[in-house]
Amino acid sequence: MQRTARALRPGARAHRRAEIHQCLGIGFDGAARQQRLGQRPELRRDGRVPRIAGDAETARKQALDVAIQDRRAPAKGEGGDRARSRAADAGQLRETFDRLDREEGVRAILLTGSGRAFCSGGDVESIIGELFGRDYQGLLDFTRRTGALILSILRCRRPVVGVLNGLVAGAGAVIAAACDVRIASEDAKIAYLFTKVGLSGADMGASWLLPRIVGLGRAAEILMTGDFLSAEEAYRIGLYNRVAPKEDVASLGREWAEKLARGPSFALEVTKKMLYREAAMDLVSAMEAEVEIQAACMEDPNFRESYDAFREKRKPRFT
Image (cartoon, rainbow, N blue to C red; front, top):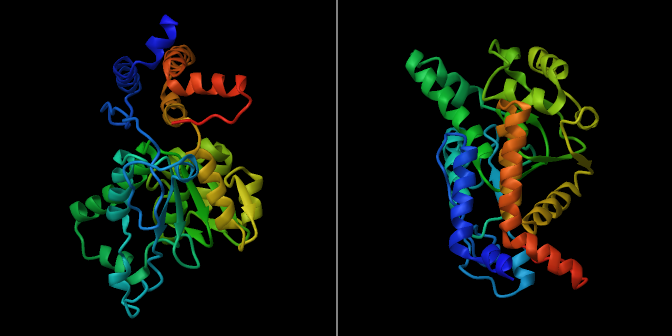
């Protein structure tokens, strides 16, 4: 009984989590972040989260939708003004992920395109053409801003499910690679087009992310040629987790996001962080980090909830 009381004591639990966060350097920048616990708020379509959920049914649905406005298509209601269709550009999308990482009640994020494409990269005139007027410092500012978007997705503690509802190209392909899970439409062909326009295939973290997903040999081929892969081929080599008919991809992606949103939040958070953190560790260091975080998870109330649910022959209600 004494061990149970210790495991459920909020102050000790929060302190332990802060220690684990500092050990892992959660946030990739070495800054410790402490997760705040609470009841599961209901998901609302406007993206705002009420403070407390009323029941278990509403608490289940905490997968928040984030839509990318494809820069090659006019934004709705803007009369085809492409320069103004950049409402969800790299900076704003980065700010969205930074906010969702801190926002209580968000347990998973579903990222998709708002039009026919997931994201087809930079518009030739309003984005790429504008770069020719910049000096080196201005170009560096641009590349750092786009790279910061990918870091914000990777740093976000919530699982990110990418629903690739159409064409995936250029920057959009790197954004897709930064998602934890990729659910693609059968017409969602993908290409890392950078070398096609005389740029390095190593852009926005692509040369770090892609080999970890498909292996070094495949990544070299994909990044050096810039050729398109069909959804079928992307699934075959492991770049896509699932492929579905176009009419079913949105619902399948939401099923995945809601499944993750119902999971144990702290355990999923540290699992995501360790998948990337261990890339820079040797085996002994990785093993030591894992034994420490697993011991911390054993003090988390979700571990006890799983045990109680098994004994009571019911589904666990994780926080």
